[in-house]
Length: 245
Ligand code: NAD
Image 1 (cartoon, rainbow, N blue to C red):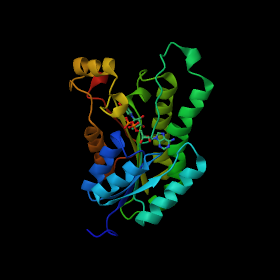
Image 2: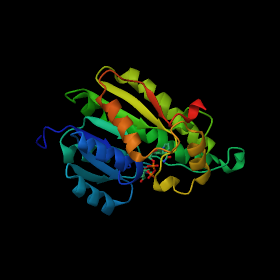
Image 3: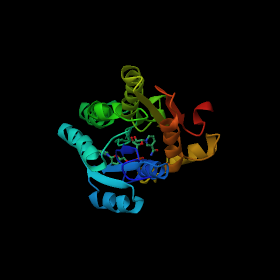
């Protein structure tokens, strides 16, 4: 496939963790990937060179102008936009019964990055996604915490629930040209969760799959949604079956 024939996917927060796994997978599936991060420019450029069919763009998604610039830069660098994966997100650990620690400032910070930024990126990307030859596709990375009363903090879980519902609302609003789905991971082994020993033990002991997910497991679920022409508005829970126990 030549560079211009390859469809293009923008994956936010993709220089580490789950996003890097998704980027690797989509390159292997024939996409050119626009890698993105807030600050790790060097890591982004190294990964882009390694993946070959990839370019890198920096943007702080908490800042409105940066989101507009990111979509424009992605299209300028890669020539088109077929898939948007809203993976970038922030989490803060606050015990659910410590209401005072879940401050209004924390609620706003998490909402800006986890809910408003993904929606705004979809809005900016809409004209390009509509022009995608096979139809445009959005995949939001939410969390099992947005489905069940769990997660690092109440504000975090609430942002992911909002992202799940936004996924369904956008699926209706943008059909049939653009499909919108979400993957809701349980625990995933990334640098972020390296010291979450209680959660790791829970997944080993209680999840039917007896382990946390790897970034590749989540990337596989994303690739499935990207490849499935009839799926829209789905929130795919990928928690190794923990919700069943
Ligand atoms: P991570 O910290 O490695 O990745 C998060 C990415 O988001 C990073 O690249 C970071 O730079 C980017 N990001 C954060 N704030 C940003 C901002 N203001 N502007 C631009 N980029 C920003 O963590 P991860 O575990 O790979 O998480 C990826 C996604 O998966 C997140 O949305 C997270 O909520 C979700 N998730 C993770 C787990 C898990 O167990 N690791 C479970 C469920 C959901």
